[in-house]
Amino acid sequence: MTERQRPETPAGGLRERKRTRTRLMIQAEALRLFAEKGYAETTVEEIAEAAAISPRTFFRYFPSKEDVVVWDEYDDPSLDLFRARPADEPLAEKMRVVIREALAGLYRRDPERLLARFRLAVAVPELRARFYDAQRDGVELLASIVQPQGAADTLRLRVIGSALLAAVMVAGDRWQETDGKSDLIALLDEATDVLAEGMQGLESSRHG
Image (cartoon, rainbow, N blue to C red; front, side):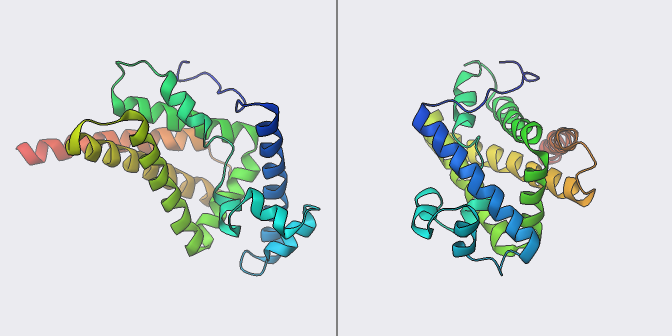
C-alpha cells in the first residue's frame, strides 16, 4: 500500500463486521445526544434507549461512556497497515504513514462524526485524558508487535509514537477551531513536518 492509497474498510469476519456496525450505530446516537444535551448530562441509559438496546448490551460493546467517544473502527486495522509496510522502512516513517492512513480513512468516511469527537476531546477534560490514555495503549501495543531490542529501542519507539500521536491531536485541535472547514490531513502533514524540522533542530543544538 502506498501512502496516498485509501485504506480498505476494516477487515474481519461477518461477526466482527456486525459488531463494528453496532458500535458505529451506538456511537452515532451517543454523539447526537452529547450535542443536544451535553456530555455530562447524557447517561448510558439514555444512549441505550436511543440505540434501542439495553444498558447491559451497551456495556457489551463499550466499557464506559468515555469509550463511545474514543473508539474508532480503524483501531485494529491500523496494526494490519503497520505489518504491511516494507520491512526496511524506517520506523518513524512507517508509523507516520500508518497514523496518516488511519486518520484519513476516518476523515473520508465520516468527517462530521470525527469532528464531533475532536470537539468533545477539547471540551471535556476527562475525554482529553482518555484519548491520551488510548494513544499510550496504542503505542504499547505497537511495541509488542515490533518487539524492540532492549530499553533504548523501546524508548525510541515510545517517543516517536507519542510525538506523532500528539501531532494528530494538535492537527485535530486546529481543525475543530475552523469548524471542520480546513483540510484535516493537510493540517496533520503540516504538524508532522514541523515535528520533523524541530527534531532536526534539537539534534543540532545537542551536538553543537
